[in-house]
Length: 162
Image (cartoon, rainbow, N blue to C red; front, side, top):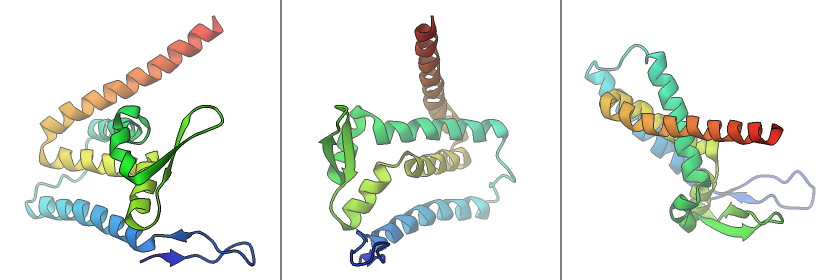
């Protein structure tokens, strides 16, 4: 099921958007995360609030994991079924969502750091609710790597100024 938005330019047709596929992805996200929250609440193990440390850890780890999924060459095989690759003017590889329907919707998801970030952060928060020790250890690896990335940028900037 695809929806077509009205075009802002008279006489032209706006590109179709896979609204049904977008809806399916939203249902998957909300259904999975909502079910987990409901089950945790039913067990009376849902905390009133997450400690600030856990929230920061999930956020930093989610940021790093989303960048890894969306941008890293090593994870290109995960994106390949859903994107078309072209070379830009600057020699960089560009990935665009494929075709229509579910493939396009997933292609748009896996090329959007912010979109994947929400799924990654939700996964870390879910892990903190279900298995906090394992999740903290796993998230710590991603958070430490994110900090390392920022230090690399700062180091390069310092060398360029020297």
